Every structure is written in structure tokens, then in C-alpha cells.
Length: 453
Image 1 (cartoon, rainbow, N blue to C red):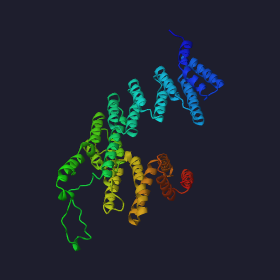
Image 2 (spheres, rainbow, N blue to C red):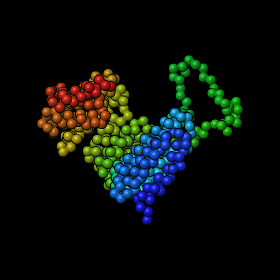
Image 3 (cartoon, rainbow, N blue to C red):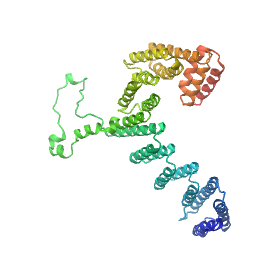
Image 4 (tube, rainbow, N blue to C red):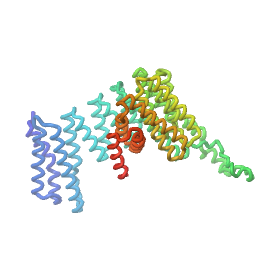
């Protein structure tokens, strides 16, 4: 069995042709070549010795990256060609590192990120295959791989394959179920977007009447290219029936996310909290054509399995207002029904009063901002009154009405990136609780943020 020195010598000998070429083309001087060889020798002896650590490989790789960057600059400045590749050396060291420390996920992730940066797609496929085979119960790896194939290569087949294989090993991971459904919803959005760009979402069988001119215009018969050349209708015409069938495929109707949701609910025994998470995730895709159907299916399942749960109330509230703009005539009655539902739930579910009150605050603030932009004074009054009501309700349950519970909500909104909502809540709360120290500090930080916008 070869010792550490023999292994180091073996790997160092593989660099000899590369170093000779660098010296021959005067990319590096003889002294620099000697320094490079010595540095590599030191690293090779360290990583081949007993007691080596993944950080030793990381330092070796960092040195090779810097060396490769210098080599590239020299080649560009001198205008010479070099057959050597520093990336090949780096990949080789990474591969040796993950084989020796296969359980170190940090090293694996650095390997993956380097391959992504270098756009080594074939190499990435090999890395993903190897890492999930060694760590099949790590849900983050399955999600990462699926996202990579979807976002970088637009490969839904591979992305879907990783999600489905991951669920075989991690069927009790709620996050993996949610991410799989999210992946399929994103795919629906991409397909729908392409159809819109190509004009395939328009129903050509319906004629749009020009109401402003029909009364005073003479109606002329429609003349198409097929009337001039009948053969076009048979050869080059648009197959309307095929387009209609395409629009009703399971991919576009939301059947796949629905199937994932149903499977997840069966796996987790109709957990209402999980259904609420699915609903919140789907609701983010308000531009996807089939999202209303998906949301209604989630709500129907909740109402059937847990009709009195808080999650059902929360989803019902959101469904009543989903997709309705504050300027729509349907908005006031929908808002009234939603607020009545929430007010009743707060009275009946005393143990969940704080959660429902906070939910009401989070829902009303963006609606209040929207009505201010559209100029609806009556709606603003109702929403502002409801905001104060839910704020008082939350404080009564929390810290005795001094505004500290609202401070926590404001911090949460800030952390979620909802700076405008946080600012609005601070302004509203200061009218109720005055000079609360926490609110004053948050107001200062929000003002500072606004100046940098």
C-alpha cells in the first residue's frame, strides 16, 4: 500500500507537463514554477497524510483558484495560447475531497457551487447523482437539485424526477411536499406565459364586437386567406380543436399540484396546518390561470376534513378576497363577509385569539395601503377601524396593552421584507399607544430605511 509521500509524488508528477508548458511559453518564470511546485507538494503531503481535514482541501482549492486567475491574466497580457486548465485541477481536487470526506455536506455544496459558476452542466449532473445517492435523507439536496434543473436548464423532467425520488426517502418531510407542489405551479406559470406570448391563450372561435362603431358601420363579410386559396385551410390553418385540447391538459388545469396536495394530505392525515401552508404557497401565484381552481380544491378539502379549524377560517378569509381588486365593485361585499367571518372566529376561538388577530393585522395593512392609492374613503375608514380593533385584541392577549405585541409583529414584517407594511403598522399603533419605546425605535429605523429607498 502506497504511503502519503508516494501518493503525493504520483499526483505531483501529473502536473509536470503543465508546468513545463507554462515555463516554455514564459507565462511563469523558473522561480515561480519552483514556488508553485513546492506549494503543491506541501498541500499534497497534507491532504494525503493521516488526520487531514476537509478544510485542507478547501485551502488547496483556494490556492489553485488564485493561481488559475493569475495564469489567465498572464495569458491575456502576453497574447499566448495555453492548453493547460486550472479548472481541471480544481475539479480533480474537489472530487478527491468529496470521495475522502463523503459525509461533509459543506464540501459537497462548495463543489456544486463551483460547477454551477463554471457552467459545467455535465459535471453537475454527475455531482448531483453522487451526492443524493450518498445522502438520500437530506431533503435540502433533493430540493436544491430540482431547483437547479428547473431554474438553470428549464428541465422539468429531471427536476420532477429528483422531487419524486426524494419523496421516496423523505416522505415525512412537509417542506419537500410543499416545494414539489411549488415547482409544478411554477411550471404551470411558465407554460401559461409562453402561451400568452404566442397568442395561444386567445379563443379565436369567438369574435369580439366593436361596440363603438357597429351601429353606424356597414357590416362586410369576413374574407380570409382561405377564401383566396382554399388549400391553406387544409395545410397551414390553425387547429383550433388542438389548441382547445391543449388548454385542458392536466398541466395547465392545475391537476398535478392538486394531486401532490392530495397525496401530502393523505400522508399527514389531513393536517389543517399543512393545508394552510399549501394554500399560502399557492396564493403567491396569483397570475397563474388555474390557481383559483387549486386554491378552491385546498379549501374544499379543509372544509371537509376540518370545518371548524382555525386554518380553515384563515384560508376562507383569503379565498373570499382572492383576485378582487379594491377598485372592483365586488370588493366591499367580499371584505364585509371576510371581516364578519374573522370577527366571529375571534369570539368563538378564544384560545386562538392572538393568532387570528395577528392574521387580521397582516391581511388588512396591504389592503389599507391599496385603498389609499385608489382613493376610497369609506373603505379606508372600515379598514383603519378594523386594524385598530385587531391591534387592541392582540395586545389584550399579549402584554397588557402597552404595544409590545405590536412591536413583535412589526419586527416580523421587517424581517419578511415588508417594510411598507411595517411602517404603516407603526404609524397606526403610535396613535393608540403613544411613546412606546419599542415603537419609537422601530419608527426611527424605518425612517432611516425610507431615506435609502
